[in-house]
Amino acid sequence: MEVNITFLGGASTVTGSKYLVRHNGHSMLVDCGLFQGYKQLRQRNWHPLPLTPHQIDAVVLSHAHLDHSGYLPLLARDGYTKSIHCTPGTRDLCAILLPDSGHLQEEDAAFLNRHQLSQHAPALPLYTRLDAQHCMKQFRTHAFHKPFEPIPGWRVTFTPAGHILGAASVLLEVGGRRILFSGDLGRPDDLVMNPPEAPPQADTVLVESTYGDRQHGQEDILQELGPALQRLSQRGGVAVVPVFAVGRAQAVLHAINLLKKQGTIARSLPVFLDSPMAVSTTGLFAHHTGEHRLTAHEADALSHTATMVQTTDESKALARRHGPMVILSASGMATGGRVLHHLALYAGDHRNMIIITGYQAPGTRGARIASGEKTTRIHGQDVDVRAEVVQLTSASAHADANQTLAWLRSMGHAPDRVYVVHGEMGAADMLRQRIEHELRWRAAVPEHGSTLTA
Image (cartoon, rainbow, N blue to C red; front, side, top):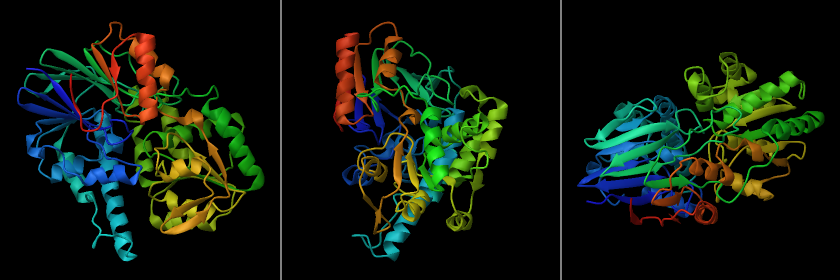
């Protein structure tokens, strides 16, 4: 019997990654992500899957980011009772990310109900913090390079993918086929994370294409961030830095620490990390030392580079301070969380700065600010954007097109087919063309909901 893959997310879009593998009456879900960005994509989160959760025999996660893991609490609440397989780093991060996601959704629903802004009465969260905490009981961890069988006869091996703590490429051996899911690939020159390992040999490859149509610039994050913070300090402004609590926050903190050591910016420049989730994540770097480039001293220094802001009252108190100062706050695409309050407060002053630190999915507030929009809507109000907008092209945690091609090329033998996933249509198709023309491999961009042969 052949092996089929149904693309339930991450197809012609960079969010919602879900790949359903079926063979001989069994089903396994590789990644279980939330859709983010455009409203029509977010609405997919409310649509039922084409099979019931009871019909899924196993879930395997490549890494913890919500566009790969954020649907899990809903899947479990709706009846999925089997195991969720991942690396220890991914489990540790999901224990932080998923309950926070549930909490934010409860807060958003309460806000809509309080201000009667929802078309539905009452507005409901997709899932709750409690739902997320319950699903954590189903997690089972596996070390890199140690094969395991989530379903009898289905063999899975994790290999390091860089990107964030715990991130893995997933090799599935089933039905005589070797299927490789790249997951999100890190950069070989990342400031913090180790480079992704060369891929194992496979018959079918699903490769991400977030940056499939572009190359990262030559500047590193220190060369970009240093002059920006110098300008900010000279004019006494406040920099609001939307960061992903997992990965990006720690990379920016490490860069600021290095800039202060070098004397590029003053050691006295106040820095605040206003995200309980990012604060918790920062502490994990000391527990997963083999996965990143930081020494034990540097990992410890992350927690001392900024004032760690935990409570809502501490967050609100920042508004009483004067610049210059730097506020790192989630979410990274400015779609929710505490960063919205800081943007509403500081975006209207030309002395201030908004620093965009990585990929912004189309349709997100971060993408609109990065594109130069002069107003942004926050909590039902239009906010003028007069602050200087700085986009750090070097802060991305994803491999660019050339780096992704180099990773594929290191496989050695050509796979039978490559499916280009986890990218907007233009980026995915550009990478498909380059794979076909430069590597001479068969490649295709799957459509959402399609089922193809592995």
